[in-house]
Length: 449
Ligand code: FES
Ligand SMILES: [Fe+2]
View 1: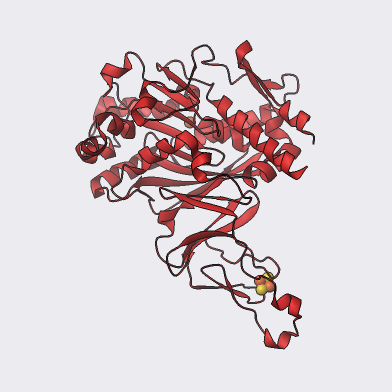
View 2 (view 1 turned 60 degrees about the vertical axis):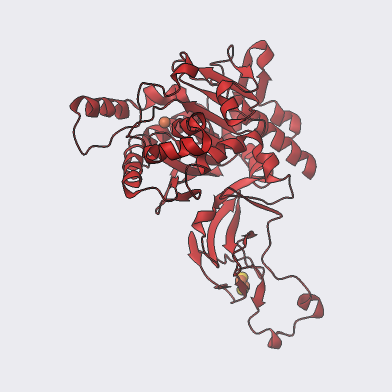
């Protein structure tokens, strides 16, 4: 596929009031192949949390594109990432999601590796009549050329690339806001949920930042919140949503907004008042003392963040970390966890988990609503009579370049901002995704040309 064909799938003419993405970007197997090679296997992707591998010799397994990966902590406690494939013939070395082991013995021919990825044994080496050339060859696990730990968020790349700070850019402030909530950063609550949906991975990328769908896709959730509020029953899940703004003097009709960043990261956010239904309430004063009230209020606000291309941290009804794993143009795997500040009280943790179960997971009230809509869209993307998607237009006339007054609180300089009321439901933040999508494809295609 030629670059001209790929770049023609995004019609980016915002100065003419127009932005659209061609449906083929969601359905074409050749595009999917390019995405795997040049986006997922051609630059930084999220791997997991350092808190999943707290002790020497701990490991976690994941994938980067189509490549199996193991992140290991060696005996000295140093983290590193490797291709999870035996150098003999390629069998997986670690099979569990997370585990611990000083020594990993391949189950095929018993070659063994330590927790630093070093080859420490070849079965029957002395009797193997191996050549000098073989004896001198590197048999260690393949180390990823780029690996980084940013505030406990682990990233890796299968190709040499820019420093992680450059990839995260100004969106790193959003990871800081999340990480600063805990005395000692964040952790994943034990337990994970893995599910698939019948749709392209970019449906999930968009939906996390899609305020427009909320009232129409999730009426049963909203009705239940209303019912609980009316009945004021004890022992039911208390929703975090409320009507008053803790930032009333700054907001003047603004109830939230969006940001987009050059590297394809985005945020949509909404004011959430500080009340005792928010798990962070117990630390509110302490956080205000440490960071100032305005920055503390950012921690309380709803924040749906995407770090392109595969990490989402959604802090809304509760707090969820998601890893997006594309399986094909029309199938995606989601791996989701409840994420929480380390050291919060049992009461706050309980509140967080109850809200989590209420809203998220295939058994919760929101996730299934979303995934059936993704599948619907995937079917509808077959519509060659209307090839251009019209979902990138809301907010076109009010988006502004650079930061707004709320980003200033964090000292953050997004590429574009959209402070707005609850009815706008900006769609222009998706433009950042597709600009980064094109730019990563371009770099990769040029590199492999
Ligand atoms: S594939 Fe691992 S020892 Fe043969
Ligand atoms: Fe949703």
